[in-house]
Length: 153
Image (cartoon, rainbow, N blue to C red; front, side):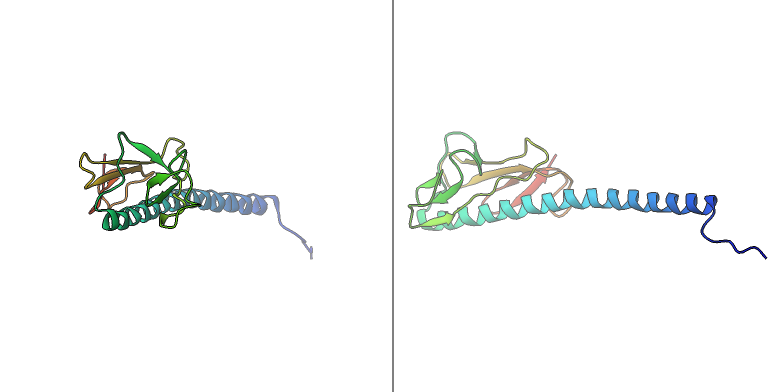
């Protein structure tokens, strides 16, 4: 009677193949989860900015005025105070959003872009999703106004 200890070559190859397959599946699932998480952060950030802008509108009866589209969360537009978008809100007593978040990357060119309408009674906050979010529309290019969130191609 022969007493075998350990696994044979075929058994080891099968086990390694199964582990490789499971790890590949896990990586694919995790990659999709990262995209969804970044998109969820973009949507939450944009809704937070929308809320701050609507509170600003309730106090001032207009939205912060812009001549052209500005990128929020970077440069001179990192907070929203009673004076509008500013670089720093450290000295202001009335702050609507102390630190405007910048959009998560990738993609590198994704930003939160704000522009007010001609009469400052509405605004458009634009950003891009990585995946289509069925509850927001049929596209990845999203626009938030004072009353709605909509994504189109």
